Image (cartoon, rainbow, N blue to C red; front, side, top):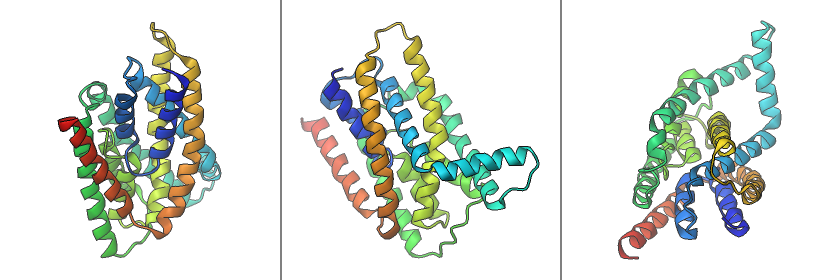
Length: 269
Protein backbone atom coordinates (compact mmCIF):
# COMPACT_ATOMS: atom_id res chain seq x y z
CA UNK A 1 0.00 0.00 0.00
CA UNK A 2 1.44 3.37 -0.99
CA UNK A 3 1.34 6.52 1.14
CA UNK A 4 -1.31 8.21 -1.02
CA UNK A 5 -3.70 5.26 -0.69
CA UNK A 6 -3.09 5.07 3.06
CA UNK A 7 -3.74 8.80 3.44
CA UNK A 8 -6.96 8.51 1.44
CA UNK A 9 -8.17 5.61 3.59
CA UNK A 10 -7.26 7.59 6.72
CA UNK A 11 -9.28 10.53 5.43
CA UNK A 12 -12.26 8.27 4.68
CA UNK A 13 -12.09 6.68 8.15
CA UNK A 14 -11.71 10.01 9.95
CA UNK A 15 -14.61 11.75 8.27
CA UNK A 16 -17.05 8.82 8.16
CA UNK A 17 -16.49 7.40 11.67
CA UNK A 18 -18.42 10.25 13.25
CA UNK A 19 -20.72 11.30 10.41
CA UNK A 20 -23.63 8.82 10.05
CA UNK A 21 -22.74 7.39 6.66
CA UNK A 22 -20.81 4.26 7.83
CA UNK A 23 -17.03 4.29 8.06
CA UNK A 24 -16.70 0.51 7.65
CA UNK A 25 -18.96 0.58 4.60
CA UNK A 26 -16.94 3.38 3.00
CA UNK A 27 -13.66 1.59 3.79
CA UNK A 28 -14.92 -1.59 2.13
CA UNK A 29 -15.74 0.43 -0.98
CA UNK A 30 -12.48 2.40 -0.78
CA UNK A 31 -10.39 -0.78 -0.60
CA UNK A 32 -12.13 -2.07 -3.72
CA UNK A 33 -11.76 1.27 -5.51
CA UNK A 34 -8.02 1.49 -4.72
CA UNK A 35 -7.46 -2.24 -5.26
CA UNK A 36 -5.66 -2.58 -1.92
CA UNK A 37 -7.62 -5.51 -0.54
CA UNK A 38 -4.62 -7.02 1.18
CA UNK A 39 -4.57 -9.72 3.86
CA UNK A 40 -4.12 -7.12 6.59
CA UNK A 41 -6.77 -4.73 5.26
CA UNK A 42 -9.22 -5.33 8.13
CA UNK A 43 -6.40 -4.89 10.65
CA UNK A 44 -5.34 -1.69 8.88
CA UNK A 45 -8.92 -0.42 9.16
CA UNK A 46 -8.87 -1.20 12.88
CA UNK A 47 -5.67 0.81 13.37
CA UNK A 48 -7.40 3.73 11.67
CA UNK A 49 -10.26 3.23 14.13
CA UNK A 50 -7.70 3.42 16.93
CA UNK A 51 -6.66 6.83 15.62
CA UNK A 52 -10.26 8.04 15.61
CA UNK A 53 -10.67 6.70 19.15
CA UNK A 54 -7.78 8.97 20.13
CA UNK A 55 -9.67 11.84 18.49
CA UNK A 56 -12.66 11.09 20.77
CA UNK A 57 -10.40 11.08 23.83
CA UNK A 58 -8.86 14.41 22.89
CA UNK A 59 -12.15 16.10 21.98
CA UNK A 60 -14.06 14.88 25.05
CA UNK A 61 -11.09 14.87 27.42
CA UNK A 62 -12.76 16.94 30.16
CA UNK A 63 -15.90 14.80 30.16
CA UNK A 64 -13.93 11.56 30.07
CA UNK A 65 -11.65 12.76 32.87
CA UNK A 66 -14.70 13.53 35.02
CA UNK A 67 -16.18 10.09 34.30
CA UNK A 68 -12.90 8.32 35.13
CA UNK A 69 -12.71 10.27 38.38
CA UNK A 70 -16.27 9.21 39.12
CA UNK A 71 -15.34 5.54 38.68
CA UNK A 72 -12.37 5.75 41.07
CA UNK A 73 -14.32 7.78 43.63
CA UNK A 74 -17.17 5.26 43.48
CA UNK A 75 -14.73 2.38 43.96
CA UNK A 76 -13.27 4.23 46.94
CA UNK A 77 -16.78 4.83 48.31
CA UNK A 78 -16.35 8.60 48.09
CA UNK A 79 -19.15 11.04 47.19
CA UNK A 80 -19.80 11.28 43.45
CA UNK A 81 -22.05 13.21 41.10
CA UNK A 82 -25.09 10.89 40.68
CA UNK A 83 -25.59 12.01 37.07
CA UNK A 84 -21.98 11.20 36.14
CA UNK A 85 -22.23 7.80 37.83
CA UNK A 86 -25.42 7.03 35.91
CA UNK A 87 -23.71 7.93 32.62
CA UNK A 88 -20.78 5.63 33.49
CA UNK A 89 -23.20 2.77 34.16
CA UNK A 90 -25.14 3.51 30.97
CA UNK A 91 -21.93 3.49 28.91
CA UNK A 92 -20.74 0.25 30.50
CA UNK A 93 -24.05 -1.56 29.94
CA UNK A 94 -24.44 -0.07 26.47
CA UNK A 95 -21.07 -1.49 25.43
CA UNK A 96 -22.01 -5.10 26.23
CA UNK A 97 -24.19 -5.96 23.17
CA UNK A 98 -21.58 -4.87 20.61
CA UNK A 99 -18.78 -6.72 22.44
CA UNK A 100 -20.70 -9.99 22.66
CA UNK A 101 -21.97 -9.88 19.07
CA UNK A 102 -18.56 -8.72 17.83
CA UNK A 103 -16.94 -11.87 19.25
CA UNK A 104 -19.48 -14.17 17.59
CA UNK A 105 -19.54 -12.33 14.26
CA UNK A 106 -15.81 -11.69 13.84
CA UNK A 107 -15.32 -14.39 11.20
CA UNK A 108 -18.18 -12.95 9.14
CA UNK A 109 -16.77 -9.43 9.51
CA UNK A 110 -13.62 -10.57 7.73
CA UNK A 111 -15.42 -12.25 4.82
CA UNK A 112 -19.15 -12.09 4.10
CA UNK A 113 -19.69 -8.62 5.58
CA UNK A 114 -17.09 -7.08 3.24
CA UNK A 115 -19.40 -7.29 0.25
CA UNK A 116 -20.37 -4.10 -1.65
CA UNK A 117 -23.91 -5.34 -2.34
CA UNK A 118 -24.42 -5.99 1.37
CA UNK A 119 -23.06 -2.50 2.11
CA UNK A 120 -25.57 -1.00 -0.32
CA UNK A 121 -28.42 -2.90 1.31
CA UNK A 122 -27.50 -1.84 4.84
CA UNK A 123 -27.04 1.76 3.73
CA UNK A 124 -30.67 1.71 2.58
CA UNK A 125 -32.00 -0.14 5.64
CA UNK A 126 -30.11 2.24 7.91
CA UNK A 127 -31.65 5.18 6.06
CA UNK A 128 -35.15 3.90 6.84
CA UNK A 129 -34.16 3.61 10.52
CA UNK A 130 -33.04 7.26 10.37
CA UNK A 131 -36.38 8.22 8.79
CA UNK A 132 -38.30 6.46 11.55
CA UNK A 133 -36.14 8.12 14.22
CA UNK A 134 -36.86 11.53 12.71
CA UNK A 135 -40.60 10.78 12.60
CA UNK A 136 -40.64 9.73 16.26
CA UNK A 137 -38.44 12.68 17.23
CA UNK A 138 -40.77 15.19 15.60
CA UNK A 139 -43.82 13.77 17.35
CA UNK A 140 -42.57 13.22 20.90
CA UNK A 141 -41.18 15.09 23.89
CA UNK A 142 -37.42 14.88 24.52
CA UNK A 143 -36.37 14.55 28.15
CA UNK A 144 -32.65 14.17 27.49
CA UNK A 145 -32.37 11.75 30.43
CA UNK A 146 -29.90 8.87 30.18
CA UNK A 147 -30.17 5.82 32.45
CA UNK A 148 -28.92 2.23 32.30
CA UNK A 149 -32.03 1.02 30.46
CA UNK A 150 -31.60 3.72 27.81
CA UNK A 151 -27.87 2.97 27.57
CA UNK A 152 -28.53 -0.73 26.94
CA UNK A 153 -31.10 -0.03 24.23
CA UNK A 154 -28.77 2.41 22.47
CA UNK A 155 -26.07 -0.26 22.78
CA UNK A 156 -28.30 -2.64 20.82
CA UNK A 157 -28.43 -0.07 18.04
CA UNK A 158 -24.64 0.20 18.17
CA UNK A 159 -24.32 -3.54 17.62
CA UNK A 160 -26.03 -3.14 14.23
CA UNK A 161 -22.94 -1.24 13.10
CA UNK A 162 -20.96 -4.48 13.16
CA UNK A 163 -22.40 -4.91 9.68
CA UNK A 164 -20.76 -2.40 7.28
CA UNK A 165 -23.21 0.17 5.98
CA UNK A 166 -25.27 0.79 9.10
CA UNK A 167 -22.94 3.36 10.75
CA UNK A 168 -22.09 3.24 14.45
CA UNK A 169 -22.68 6.94 15.01
CA UNK A 170 -25.84 6.89 12.89
CA UNK A 171 -27.41 3.93 14.64
CA UNK A 172 -26.62 5.19 18.14
CA UNK A 173 -27.78 8.75 17.39
CA UNK A 174 -31.00 7.37 15.89
CA UNK A 175 -31.36 5.03 18.86
CA UNK A 176 -30.89 7.93 21.27
CA UNK A 177 -33.51 9.97 19.45
CA UNK A 178 -35.94 7.04 19.63
CA UNK A 179 -35.24 6.79 23.38
CA UNK A 180 -36.26 10.41 23.89
CA UNK A 181 -32.86 12.14 23.89
CA UNK A 182 -32.30 15.41 22.07
CA UNK A 183 -30.22 15.15 18.90
CA UNK A 184 -27.32 16.88 20.65
CA UNK A 185 -27.37 14.60 23.72
CA UNK A 186 -27.76 11.55 21.49
CA UNK A 187 -24.69 12.56 19.48
CA UNK A 188 -22.49 13.16 22.53
CA UNK A 189 -23.54 9.85 24.12
CA UNK A 190 -23.00 8.15 20.77
CA UNK A 191 -19.36 9.24 20.54
CA UNK A 192 -18.62 8.29 24.15
CA UNK A 193 -20.33 4.90 23.73
CA UNK A 194 -18.26 4.15 20.64
CA UNK A 195 -14.96 4.66 22.46
CA UNK A 196 -14.65 1.30 24.31
CA UNK A 197 -15.60 -0.71 21.21
CA UNK A 198 -13.28 1.20 18.89
CA UNK A 199 -10.40 0.98 21.38
CA UNK A 200 -10.94 -2.73 21.98
CA UNK A 201 -11.18 -3.57 18.28
CA UNK A 202 -8.22 -1.39 17.40
CA UNK A 203 -5.96 -2.76 20.13
CA UNK A 204 -6.82 -6.36 19.23
CA UNK A 205 -6.08 -5.84 15.55
CA UNK A 206 -2.94 -3.83 16.32
CA UNK A 207 -1.66 -6.77 18.36
CA UNK A 208 -2.41 -9.06 15.42
CA UNK A 209 -0.42 -6.75 13.15
CA UNK A 210 2.54 -6.72 15.53
CA UNK A 211 2.58 -10.51 15.91
CA UNK A 212 1.80 -11.20 12.25
CA UNK A 213 4.29 -13.24 10.25
CA UNK A 214 3.51 -11.22 7.14
CA UNK A 215 5.28 -8.00 6.22
CA UNK A 216 3.57 -4.95 7.72
CA UNK A 217 3.96 -1.58 6.05
CA UNK A 218 4.17 0.56 9.19
CA UNK A 219 4.99 3.77 7.33
CA UNK A 220 1.73 4.01 5.36
CA UNK A 221 -0.23 2.72 8.36
CA UNK A 222 1.21 5.48 10.56
CA UNK A 223 0.48 8.18 7.99
CA UNK A 224 -3.06 6.88 7.47
CA UNK A 225 -3.63 6.86 11.23
CA UNK A 226 -2.35 10.43 11.54
CA UNK A 227 -4.72 11.62 8.83
CA UNK A 228 -7.63 9.74 10.45
CA UNK A 229 -6.90 11.42 13.80
CA UNK A 230 -6.84 14.98 12.45
CA UNK A 231 -9.84 14.52 10.17
CA UNK A 232 -11.68 12.71 12.97
CA UNK A 233 -11.31 15.70 15.29
CA UNK A 234 -12.79 17.95 12.62
CA UNK A 235 -15.62 15.49 11.94
CA UNK A 236 -16.57 15.29 15.63
CA UNK A 237 -16.73 19.06 15.91
CA UNK A 238 -18.74 19.31 12.71
CA UNK A 239 -21.26 16.68 13.81
CA UNK A 240 -21.70 18.10 17.32
CA UNK A 241 -22.30 21.56 15.85
CA UNK A 242 -24.45 20.41 12.92
CA UNK A 243 -26.80 18.12 14.82
CA UNK A 244 -27.86 20.86 17.25
CA UNK A 245 -29.92 22.58 14.59
CA UNK A 246 -30.31 20.08 11.76
CA UNK A 247 -31.92 16.69 11.17
CA UNK A 248 -30.50 13.45 9.78
CA UNK A 249 -32.17 13.96 6.41
CA UNK A 250 -29.04 15.17 4.51
CA UNK A 251 -27.31 11.93 5.52
CA UNK A 252 -30.36 9.87 4.58
CA UNK A 253 -30.31 11.21 1.03
CA UNK A 254 -26.53 10.75 0.78
CA UNK A 255 -26.75 7.13 1.95
CA UNK A 256 -29.54 6.28 -0.50
CA UNK A 257 -27.69 7.94 -3.39
CA UNK A 258 -24.47 6.10 -2.53
CA UNK A 259 -26.32 2.78 -2.24
CA UNK A 260 -27.89 3.24 -5.67
CA UNK A 261 -24.49 4.07 -7.16
CA UNK A 262 -22.90 0.98 -5.56
CA UNK A 263 -25.67 -1.28 -6.84
CA UNK A 264 -25.40 0.21 -10.32
CA UNK A 265 -21.63 -0.40 -10.42
CA UNK A 266 -22.01 -3.90 -8.96
CA UNK A 267 -24.56 -5.03 -11.55
CA UNK A 268 -23.69 -2.93 -14.59
CA UNK A 269 -20.13 -1.74 -14.05
